[in-house]
Image 1 (spheres, helix red, strand yellow):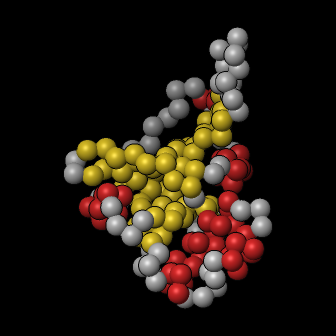
Image 2 (cartoon, helix red, strand yellow):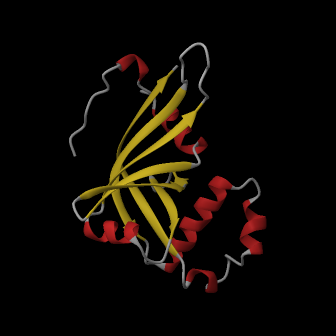
Length: 161
């Protein structure tokens, strides 16, 4: 994939820690895929796995998203931390990252479990409670579950006020 430069270099999140901070604080990513030659964009809650350099998503068992991933695994995603529009000042402070990568459906049961642990850990204040409540330490919940993973190939960050 070609890498574009930011037009406003003064707004770039050049430090990898700042980019990672956006990924850790974000709660959903808007993911762009291609399906039947047309753009398809969907917003999904995610879990960020720094060790794997990937985002994990819980997805439906079937549907357009899975068809798009199967046909063309290339993906682009955006995570935005919105600091709220400032009325009367015409300002919209934000931090954002744009990710280019490859999307796949996780078939390995152990990795599905890992992906769900990452996702729940990212979103929940007390992930162990939810983990136990839904019996996610057992095999049964994973039999009908689908998990997708976006492997990050490149990432850029930006901030604005």
